[in-house]
Length: 128
Image (tube, rainbow, N blue to C red; front, side):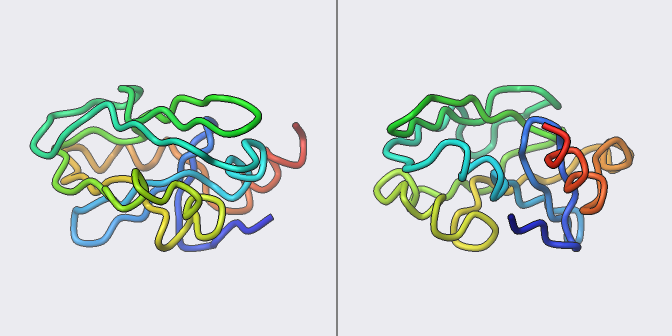
């Protein structure tokens, strides 16, 4: 299981990478592996939407299950990765690079302190 050191993680298996106040958000390798073959992604938001922690970001369906993805940070959606709507298998192949879901202008960076670092997330996944 890949758990990049430079990211923050949420217990609901989303990752966050923040650069210059912009959070890139996606699902973790653990999540994509648990889902198995992803076949469908439906975004619950659009560019310019204001979102809060816990708001629904997307629904991801696989051959095994469906999962809701939620926002780990609050802010304004500035970009949505529409490529994965047409090619959802990218989430299985590249969850941390090409498979990102959205980019958000973070409104409260203190929310990041509530997220796990890589060792904590790795331990959390091992205990499940």
